Image 1 (cartoon, rainbow, N blue to C red):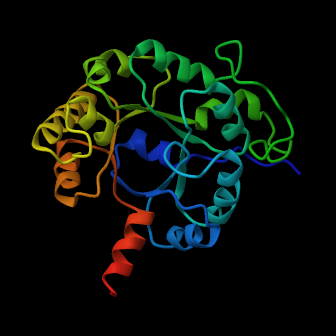
Image 2 (image 1 turned 90 degrees about the vertical axis):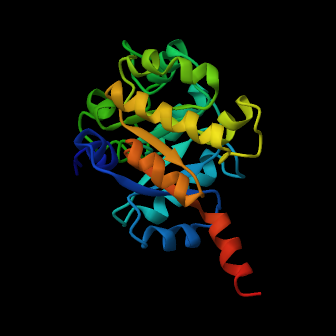
Length: 251
C-alpha cells in the first residue's frame, strides 16, 4: 500500500496567515496529552528543552494525538542535527529550534531539516515519517511539509531578526520572553514592562520582514497584546501550570 505524504496543517495555516492558538506541553503522560488534544487547540508544543521529555518519550505523545485535528510542534533541546534528525524520522513535521542567535545558526537549522545535496539530514527509509517505507517519494517531498521555526530569545538575536528572517528555508520566528527577560537583566520577570516592550517590537519587526511570528505567555494580557502586534501562533498556557492552578483552586 502506498500512502500520500501527510500535509502539515500548521504550515498551511502559517502560509495563509491564519491565527493559530496553542498550548505548551511538558508532561510525558500520553493520556493527559490525548485529553488536551480533544480541547480544540490548533497546535500543541512538546518541549524537550525544559522538561523531562526526550525524542523517545515524545513518540507516544505523537501517537496519542494523531487521531485529532491538532498539529504537534516539538522543540529539541538545542540546535543539534542528530536530535533533529531523530525527531523528523519519528514523524515530526514542525520543529521549534531554540536559542538561534544569527543568520548563520538559522542556516544550520535549515540544513538540519533538509536532505542532501542542499542540507545534511541523514537518509533512512523504514521510519514512522515515511509510513514505514509506504510513502512514495517521501525523500524528495518531505521538506515541503516541514515547518521550521527558529526561536530568538536574546537581545543579540533580536538585533539580527531581519537577517534571520531573510535566511532561505526559515518558515517562522518565535520570540521567547523568558530568556529575553534574562538578557535584559530581568531574569524571572518575563512580563516586566521592558520585556513586554522588547517582545512587542520584535514581533512587529518579524511581521514587517514577512515572516509569521509566534509567542507564548501565561500572562493573558501580555499574550493578547502580542497577538494584536501581529503574532500568528500564540500559546497562553502550559499544561503543568494549568494543572497546578486547577488543583489549587480546589484547596
